[in-house]
View (cartoon, rainbow, N blue to C red):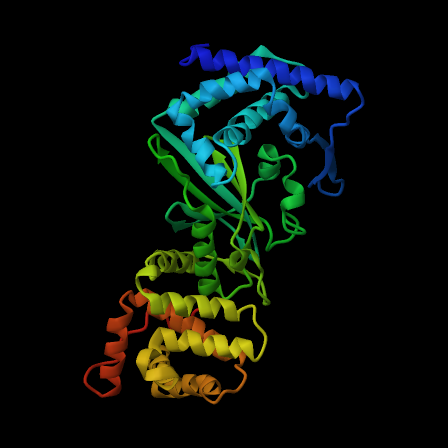
Length: 413
C-alpha cells in the first residue's frame, strides 16, 4: 500500500497492536463484549441478529488505551499533521486537551473500525491497511465529505425531498445507522423504522475544504429545517434526539439535536409530498436570513414555542408572535387586521380570518384555527422576503391606495 506518512502509519499500527493485546487479555480474563439484539423485517418471520458492540467495549477502556506508550507516540505524530485539526477541534469544545480530542476522534474510531473489520480482536494487517488508507485519504485529501443524519418523526415521505443548503428528507436505509454506530438502537426514537411516520431521516451533507478546521453547525441547521417542515406541513414534526455525524464516511461524532427541534409537539403526523417539499425548501431559504430581521426571528420563535404550550401561555405566545411579525409599534390590533388582509382572498375570507384572530385581541384562549392563521401569516411573510415592505403594502391597501399584495398560497396545510 502506498503510504503518504510512513511515521504516522507505523505509530498507529503499533498503537493498534498494543491495544488489541490489552483488549484480548481482558476478554481472556473474563470481560464480556456487550451485544445488541436487532430485529429485521423478514415478512411473517422476522429476522433477529446479535451485533457485538465493539465500539462500546473499546470506549469503556479509553482511559487505559490512551496512556499506552504507543498511544502517546501516535498522538505525537498526529499533532505534527495540521490536517488532524478538524478532528480535534470539533470535539474539544473548550474542554479537555488536544490529546483527549485526538484520542476520541482519531485513535478510538480507528481502533474500533479495525476491530469491527476483524470481527473481534484477532489482528489483520489487511484490515488495518484498509482502515488506515481511509484515514489518510481523509486527512490529506483536498476535500472532505461531511454528513449529519437525524431520525425524523411525525412525517413520512415516499421519495427523497431536497430542502436546499445540502439538507434533505429521505427514507432511512435498513440498518444504516447501526452499521456505523452499533449502539445507535438505544438512541433512536421509540418505534423508529416500524411506523409510517417514523421511517425517514433528516440529512445534512456538505463538502468541506481541506483548510476548514470546523464542521458545520449541524444542530442549528437541522433545527431550521424542522421549523420549515412544521410551517409547511402543520405536522407534529421532530428530529433526533441526537444526530449522527460522518466524515469521509467514517463515524465522526454524536451530538444532541436542539431541544425545540428534538421535542415532538402535540398533533397529527403527515406526509411530505413534492408541493410541500418545495414550500419547505423556500421557507428554509428565508429562515436562514431571519437573523437579519429581529422581529421576524422573534415571531418565528414565539410561534414555535406556542406549539408546546398550554393555555393561557399558548395564546400569549401567539399574541407576541403576531405582534412581532406584522404589528410592530402599532400593536396587536394592527397585526390582526394586516393578517386578515394578507390571508383573505375575498372580503368574506378576510372577515373570517379577523374573527379567528379576535380571540387574541380579546385575551381569550386561541382556537386551533387561530394557531393555523398565525402559521399561515408566517409562511406568507417569509415568502414575501421583505417584511417591512410587506407591512407598508398592506397599509396602503387598507387605505385604498393600491391593490392587496398577492398571496403566494391560498392554503397551507
